[in-house]
Length: 188
Image (tube, rainbow, N blue to C red):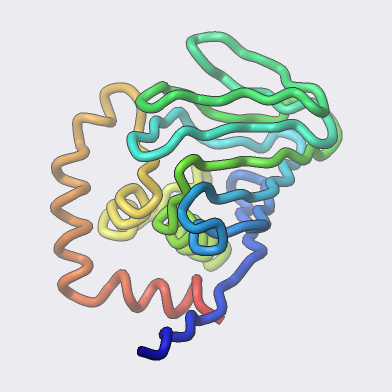
C-alpha cells in the first residue's frame, strides 16, 4: 500500500499580541510522536497567559537572553543553557521582562500535532486581527478550537469553562470550521 504523502505546513508563525515568533523545528510526525520542538523568539514585554497542559510535558530551554517562566507561583529566570520542564496539569506561562528579544526552545513530550495546528490557527487569527490584544480569538468557537487542539487550557477559574469549550470544538469540527481554519493558516 502506497504511503499517503503529507501536505507541507507552515513552519514560521508570528503573533503580534504575544510579541513572539515561533518556528517549528521538528514536528511530532517527524519524530515518530516522541516530541515536537519549536524555537520561540519573544520581544520585550511579550509572553502568554497562565495555562496548563494535560497531554504533554513542556520543556523550555533558554538559548539567547533571559527567559522568564512563572511556575509554581514563582517567577524563574532561565539563562542560556538552562532548562525547565513543566509537569502535566501545572499552571505556568512564559514572558520576556527584559529590553532585548530572547530566544528559547520549547519541546513537547510526547509530540503533539494538535498543538502545532492550533498554534498556526491562533497566530493566524491574531495576525488577521481576529483576536483581542490578549491574543485570545474574538470568536468563542475559534477560541474553543484553539484550546482543544493545543491542549492549552486556561488556569484558574477559567478552566471551569472546559466542558463548554469541548462542546464548541466538537460542533465546529462537524460544521467544517476547523478544516477551513487549517486550510487558511496551517497548510501551504
